[in-house]
Image (tube, rainbow, N blue to C red):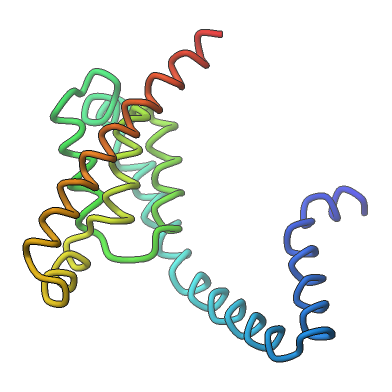
Length: 168
């Protein structure tokens, strides 16, 4: 019983928070519960497809291929591959995390994982098209370049940090 409580402590705590909100601030509690239910429905629809894709990726793409394409020695080609993989899909960012974990298991570099996740979060092509429409090409181009530079810097820092951590 205690093991089960430990395992599900986050949802249990969330339940108590929602309950507290419903008691002390009812309208906020109602909105919070509504948002939580909508988010759970969205995840219930999207996550099975993500897990199916991950399963296919585990079976169809062998570790050596990932290591060659996205590993520590992949260089510029690996960064570009990670960038393209991150910019093409549509869908929420939480769908990218299981894929990133799978890539890490297959020895993709930290740098390339950061590029993949960052591109998925901020540089998706459909997102850029909407941004161009509403904010204009100059703004979008500048944000794109600055975001890409930031991702490269963050990826490099994380790569160095994780190398030092693994050496210890």
